Length: 270
Image (cartoon, rainbow, N blue to C red):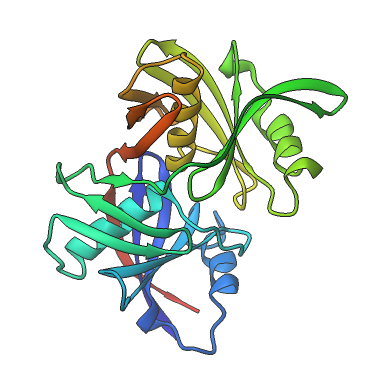
């Protein structure tokens, strides 16, 4: 069978988008993600986004990682899917409520090319805890913003072993069974951070991570390292903006705004 798809990109995170209606029920979406997301062997992407109808919201998003796992949410992915809804599905409103496994997410189009999302309330926040990683004590931070994130403050982010150290933290027994995403951040100014992220499910460094940028900004804000809004400079060189509403210790809302675009449309044989 031939499957229609759209390739999308949000600050360096790239995704394949398909409509659930186009996939026969007998097909396993997890296995499809494994095949389509392979770089150099297929379309290649950081994830597969599924557009579904929803009885509770404007539409529903499911996301599958290249390893076939299904996380609850994706900050850059949901912004790309909102662009898909406007430009391919012709849903022209400036606000969407999107159903995800992590809950309902609101996306606003205050700027045409940079949709802004309101993330789910941060959960399980833990600041400044020591963890033994590969025989050494590391001072880490943790928060879930739809998906779990560790945040490590680095003094020289360019010299960090993202693949090696990030992988050890991602699979550390402390975070099992679900594991965690791992963000290495460096304070660049009172209102900006540099970030590199090891993404769970991709199992390597990506050029950007929306929920990672949000989690890292929140942690840095709570540690008095930055002020809101926070400009987050990604490995790919693009910038995400995180808005933190409220004051310590009560955070009222967390917003993420950045560019998202549809790159091309195509068909592929399954």
